[in-house]
Length: 310
Image 1 (tube, rainbow, N blue to C red):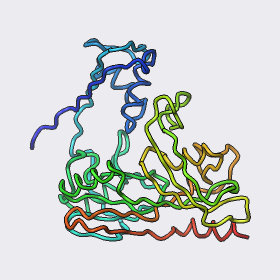
Image 2 (image 1 turned 180 degrees about the vertical axis):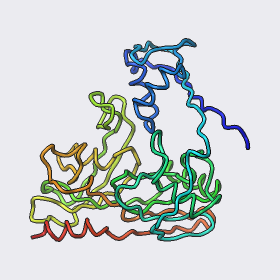
Image 3 (image 1 turned 90 degrees about the vertical axis):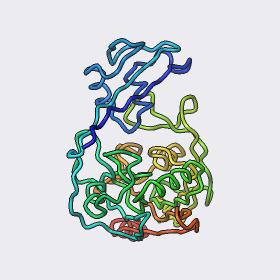
């Protein structure tokens, strides 16, 4: 078996990043990794600052050189697991899954079982693209653990490169449905606000005009739900982490059930944010034809809609 190599990442500190702690800086650059995991890498000597070992609390200067080495992951850390996957469509290139609540898309440090990838490895065997490595085979995009709905997975590198390019050029159709707090004054609108790591809480994303990345969400009201809550549709123009949740909270319409971006004393009894990836459309990587897939609203979502209408 071919020996896995560690992944190396190189960074140069800019003027805007001067004064940041190195663990804070890396958490912003490596958003798929937790800050605690990054701190462990620093402690283990896998991060160097100007070719020397460093501490998590070290402050950065302009033009500092950072090298981060992530240790190789063993194949045995991610094992196939039989799962009852809700498959919307499947062919030789792609598989479309209707993801349920409380399912993590791909393994991460400390969680190597029970994820969608574990189920895909069992269902697809070796027929998953390898571009994203051992932990994320076939995964070209993801949705949050408590977000439900349609997700495309690539079975080969040809499909993966095609879908990744379409994501980059913002040509993929992604329409979500959500239930949010408060009534809208207008029936539709657009939130155009950059998103980045919150400088106050690095576990959260926030609208960040200084260091954030371009993010655009279009929304329209589907139902006013007794004028205390609104059932809305959101169409993503970009795909930043927690984009819909952050953008809706920024305009005072946080998602019901969102314990991170919603009110502290919000609606109880819900398992995470009320958000569903309803429609996903793209050019098929082999035929070039536009195809579109839809995942029906989950039972919890429909029941909540019926309750709030009364």
